[in-house]
Image 1: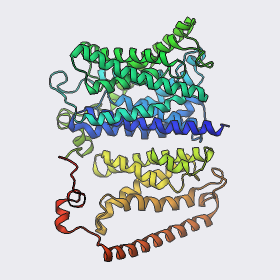
Image 2 (image 1 turned 120 degrees about the vertical axis):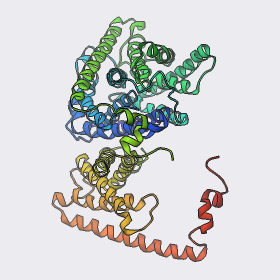
Image 3 (image 1 turned 135 degrees about the vertical axis):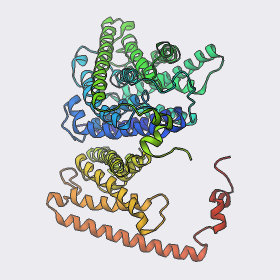
Image 4 (image 1 turned 90 degrees about the vertical axis):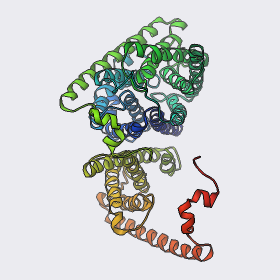
Length: 380
Length: 196
């Protein structure tokens, strides 16, 4: 039986984490072309709807062994985290993916990739047993979503004209509103994956804030040096990268370690989004891999460096606090999540392509998905 | 998100009832969003994103009376019906010929009425001992009570609104002039513009 303050904090956190979904919808919606806004904003909300029902009926039972439909605040909280993971994946595939394909893929992905990973790291699975730490989803949500996004984007192929024609964002102010909602919603992750004591939640809250702030300023600084001007979109992208990277570490590290994690996230994600993507030539439309895959991987490894039992006695010490094993456990967890999410996504997309078309046809892509997939327009 | 405060807050404490209300609110909203999407997909050939959002709002409106009294699976039934019924109500709007600009009747009126009645069917004391058993749990009387409540609220709100509108019409009038309507209310009523 939960105490009422625990119930209260979990319900508030679940509501906050839910706020990240409209946040993602706005963040992504602003960055695509005018003809694909509604499709781009609709997919995260469809992910929220579909995953919520799937998590209630079987997902939570798979990952945590609670009976389907049990009324617990943990289930409410986990529902939102699961929905966020799938919502993030959409960003790599927008402007070309068919809605029906996404529905089938998303449902299977939640059952076959996200559910098992949540069990491995949080539900008493083998990664829990070797001592790998993931406070609120750095591996379960972000590495899995990022790697899935990369594999699926490569398999489905780039958008028509990618790299040759300019793809101008339709309304960046939407993206700023979205990043703002994500930032606020992220404080819900300070509840952690399980029932963290209030002191841990407080530490996590502070860590989330300073990591996002440090990453925003780092991205801005790097961009300023490299391109002579810091973009506003770059600054908020940096904040999102910082939020992602602190997710696995938030409850285990001191505020100054969180600043270092944020600085690393801003720099690393900037490099991948601006250089690695261009060199490798894959079309990850809205940089889901560059932000969540890379940021999550860095955050998981940084947890193995900076975790400290002085901050959280229920956590562990990292490499810098004299316990190299923790670093090793974090690397194992990251490698396992990369391999598992990548392999299952590969098989899923391969298999589904036999029965469903993953992308819209050439004319529909030119006309835009709002009109062809939904029969409506965002702007008159 | 605000609706969580509405329904879970009604429990007056962070307890099991608040959790139930939170989960049934969310479950009904997402089920209704998917239901609306499915109905529209079959009926019109494509699911609109506005429809998905409208479905979610219909689900929120419909589960409001029942949220603290039903479990998540009952909430799923309520959401399923909410999406379908509100969609149908809005499709039928044309036959009645009223102009409800943004479908308050279709979503909140129809959703709310159905929600109060569905509470009479699905409510369970196993979920909330302070509530009541509905028709499905062997208490047909409770459904009767909910019908009575619906009727009373509809009559009171309808009659009250009618009288208030009559009075306001006498005192200051209800509509802007046709000229002002054509120019738009931002300019004529507020003397400002949204877009430059």
